[in-house]
Structure formats: C-alpha cells, structure tokens
Length: 200
Image 1 (cartoon, rainbow, N blue to C red):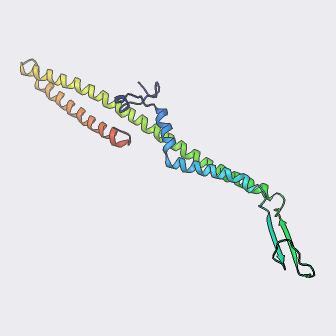
Image 2: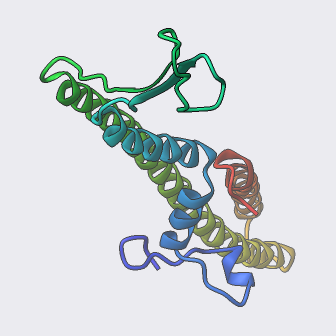
Image 3: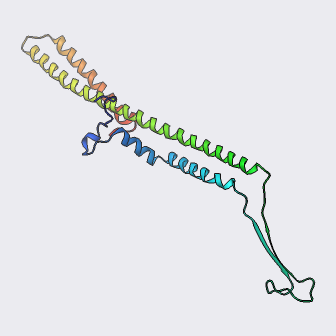
C-alpha cells in the first residue's frame, strides 16, 4: 500500500497482532518526548504567573505595644504605654500592574511558540522516519522478489548451457546481475535498519 493511500505501518508491525499507524507513532512521540514535556510544563507555569503579576502585592500587617506585656491592656498612668495594629497596602503606579500582565503574557506566548516549534519538529521527524522506513521496506521486498526471479533465470541459463542450448555469456551475465542485486539488497538492509533509526 502506498503512503498516500494508507497510514498503516509496515514491518515490524506486520509481525504483531496489532497494526501500528502513523498517527499512533506521532501520538506516542508527542506524549513521551522529554523536550516537549519540559516545554509544556514551562508554558503552564508561565500562564499561571500572568494573574499573579497583575494583582496587588500582599498587604502588610504589624502589631506593636509598650508597657504591660498583656496585649491591648493599656497601663494606666503610664503615657508611654500603648498598643497598635497597622495595615499597609502598596499601590503600584497606575498602569504598572497592567504592563506587568502584558509582559508576562508575551513571555508565556514566546514559550508557547517554542513548545509549538518543538512539537512540529518531533512530528516532522517521526513522519520522515516512518516514510523512510516504508520506502526501504518496500524496496527490500521488491528486491527480494527480483532476486528470486533472477536466481531462477540464472539456473535456467546454466542448465541450457550444460545441455548445449545456451551460451556461456548468458550465464555470466545472469551471475553478474545477481551479484549486483545482492549488493543492492545489502545496502538497502543496512539503511533500513541503521540509517533511519527505526528499523527492526
């Protein structure tokens, strides 16, 4: 089946009971890729920070007293005895909180685009590896069929030569073509297993 017709994976999926699709491989890569996971966590952290920077700072409360240590019990006849409770709220310059929120929003957006860039790169790499593997698998399959056919033709040429109905040149030509085919098969198998990193 051609890549444009179906997104079903070839071997080793053919040897298992479950068919692995390209979508399955992409989903697994997106779920398990450490770069994507790390960037996704950064995006969540940056988005959670936006409402925080847009709110007023926490108020400060202070309590003080002099004289009798009993809280809020003013010592009579002692002018230095006092109790106090104070609260202070900081109000930034008008527009400063909004500006902080806008900056945090832009920073979160920048991290999101970094996440999206990483995600698209991983998807592209998985698809490229998948179709490379598809190509080499089909090329090996076709080459093996050609090898089987050429071996039969070589055997026929040898038999015809032995009974005097063929010439030695036909035998030699068949053997040379078979040798070339075996070399091509070796190259394809090497690239199919090592070149794209997802071979069997």
